[in-house]
Length: 419
Image 1 (tube, rainbow, N blue to C red):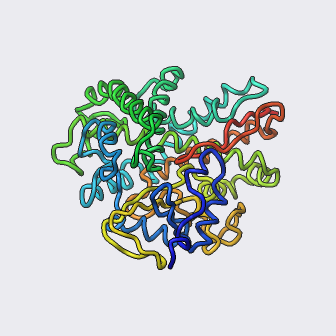
Image 2: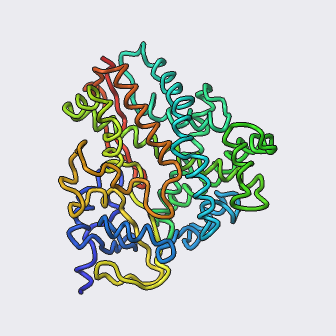
């Protein structure tokens, strides 16, 4: 096998701020795994290979502390080596089980949807009722998960300026994650990449200052809020669970559950607004198709485009020799559009036999902890918006939406006419 036969002509980096689907097809045409010379990483866009990499947490490890960006990651996580981001083995399994089985289980999320999600979305929609036009992203999608997060932690959910500031801090950390996960800090980091890292560290410190008083005052664990639950259950992970661990878990909820859901909601509405038949199907037969539509949104346009891993030992994937220490970039959305796995992979199909058969929330031991909550927020946002604004359509007089981002991507802005 020659170097040319395993090396991509283009680079994943070239797909920033535009649809990457042609790039994924190039990888799939080369056996579903190919070397990106500029990125210095294997790109995996085959569904079965992606599953194989994601499920083997020993051979294909979370790379953060082995990256040159590891020091920045540690500063962003408050210099806490026990951060959930760095946990491995039994500690990680205990943390993961605690969140999936207790804190954010399907049963708990059903209650959250009834008590928190639906009322908050009703409140946001009511604020749009007198407006003939609005931006679905800025005025709605960005506010949905922030309001849910605020309620879970006991922040002032109706103070939009306050929540916008918290979100801006979280966004700064998100920009760093995109740069670091794209391996742009692994070589000679550009001045821009370093600026992004420094801004993220400063944002993390300010975010900690906002959350620390809440964490401290609920240390007795007697409340029903999320922070109190963290205090009550932290012993499942560490016998000496402390304030720094609780703070880190709050930050985990914010980082993993806000921007990701915003992007997914935005992509859901873009799919509806650009396909009249799909819009009619979901709007008029929502009770039948809503949940299936959410799964197709996640499969085709889930917010997380890729997840990085590092090989802890030499191995082979589909005939390609992976050296110990090699980086692998698992192209989640590429795998979710793998023609070897899906019939008509690029098409929305609300009758797919296995609607949950996708990797939007990863796979294996590091599946997304907030998957059930994210689904609930997306479904509620779509259903309630279509009930209130059934004739909503893109505003042709305003800038058209563009697919922007890299690690997380969505269509924005979404300027719409309400009726």
